[in-house]
Length: 234
Image (tube, rainbow, N blue to C red; front, side, top):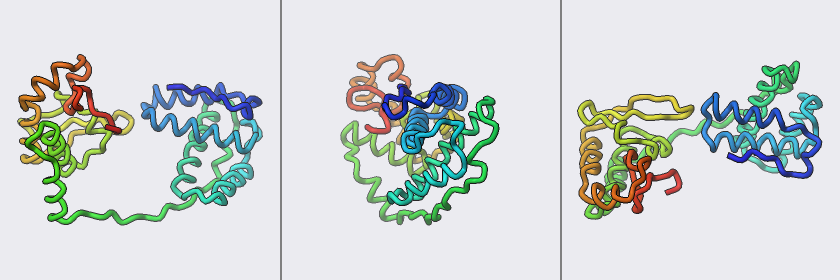
């Protein structure tokens, strides 16, 4: 991914360590592209606003920055994320010997309000599962996806990254790659397992879907109408 810092207001800051930090997060920590992009934007925004070098940043500057964000009406969740990005970056600088002390050590972020998750009623779940038109191939695929979400509580990013080899129909489980590319096994209900098996054996998937697949996409469980792997934005 691109990590250039093109804002003219940032020209006095040496962003070499930022590039090194982003590379470590991507290649060593296995952070997703989305996470690395957020780190980049958060760090860039901080130095653009504060116009300080790495060595000039102290706890008072951090508090001033957080106050500015709060006065602009940013949510607590955004404040926590930006503070986390800066905390990780300055920790990296200390680890590399570029700073003696992390200016965020004494900074406590805002506490997030705990939200009680809402659950669907059985009738609502039945209604949701009945929405796809399973007479069509894409509708059949969508019903299979909903069954897996309901059965195994998958994240969208985890679902679209599933490959054929990740599904064990005999033992009814999925090998899932989550955040940080960590693998875990998730159980699948008999109902979801049958929908998934029938989807993989569906005549249209075997013909129209896979005929136009690349070698990479052919491994994927879920394909779009053009025979390519689904993405989180599909």
